[in-house]
Length: 122
Image 1: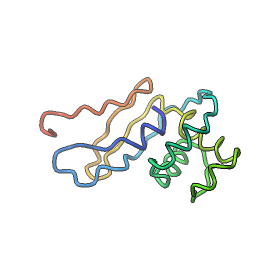
Image 2: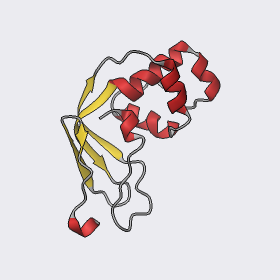
Image 3: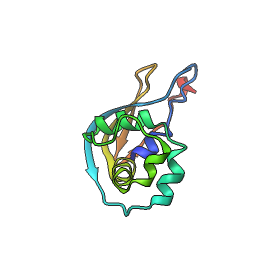
Image 4: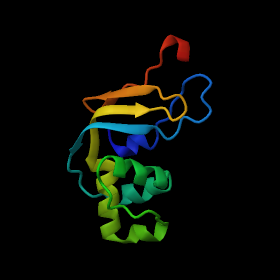
């Protein structure tokens, strides 16, 4: 699971008021090369919760993103490479996503998060 995906997932358990951001429990992280696509990154930047991305990338062992970012930084190739690495090249292969409110764990196996709810959670 890429951090791009993580940045858009939330817990939808019945009664949960604050299911975002999901905490990451790391089992295994894999890095997979993805070619730099500046236009894609510039378009996605406005849709990201950047603070959540920074924390998630640190959890997965990557601390090179600056704490704060603004759109003007998208003109820097160095920043784009760091953003590309965090968003698209880091993969949570094994682990779990944890609801911040209930503590419910959603497993991630072979890079796929299982966000299915139990009957009593719907």
